[in-house]
Length: 191
Image 1: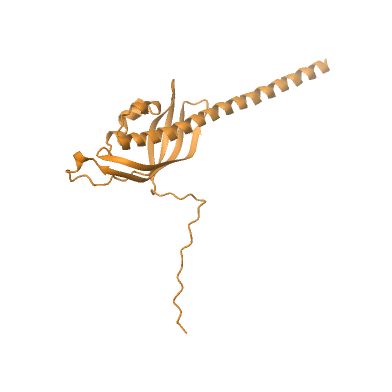
Image 2: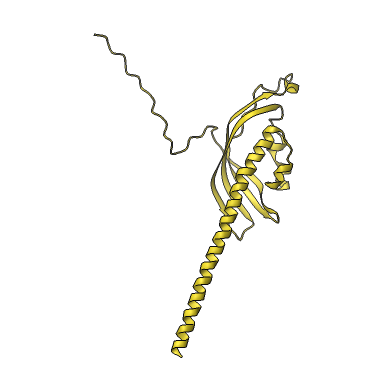
């Protein structure tokens, strides 16, 4: 009887360990899958939003990345300051610094820094006579944002963008050290 109990206890422990390991692997897989989806959604969605604002395009394509509630209340797209300009080129960069998503939740957050260091464009002909417009496009609001995501039946969507703080348009990574400032030696007297 003692051998049967030990054998039974061995199988219970083994099945418990295998079940726990498979559960951890499954939750890790689904968490990584959600994190990858949110990373792509963040980078592609924010770039598409910036392009829509700069190029005066329609917002139909944004519904794949944003909720309808967000699109109806988005200040960048509704009060677009770039409609009077033909934007030739721009340098838009996104830096995702942190993300929080759990496989069992239908919401997630991400902290993002967006920078637009260069916007080159010209004033459109129909706006040249109006003195309220400058000849060059206005500066982009470079800032740190917290993005709030929701999981819908059709997948993840960005539901809210929360402003955290403004940042400088030029960005130098922490690992880059600036070049030393040259110092000029005082002139020496000629012999």
